[in-house]
Image (cartoon, rainbow, N blue to C red; front, top):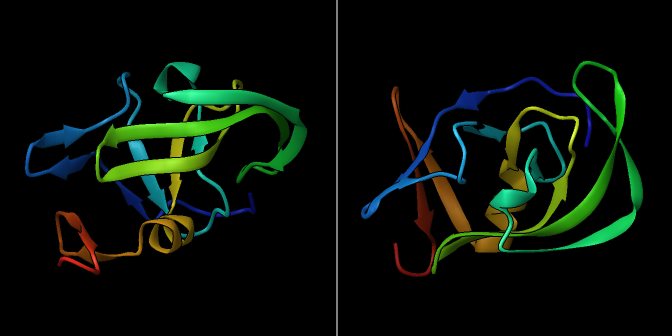
Length: 121
């Protein structure tokens, strides 16, 4: 993960309602990070321990990711290879990784962001 600043903050919403991990910590869409990051293993539907990976936070601090896994919000929206960083307090979604893995586009307005499948629109 590279140094960055947060560009968009908010919860994700679908036609069926809010898409949030099982905590009060919001999801942050971030155009400056390389990987998805979660601060709690309870968000994961599956995960595995990895060789500790040194990650540089936006603050300049270095921490270790200890697990990697998948987070499923619904059948058509899921994140893969999410890094678990227990000492981090945010849940970050890498915009570039999201767009390439889900083959989708993001449409921003003044108060919302739509994640749209490119195949089905």
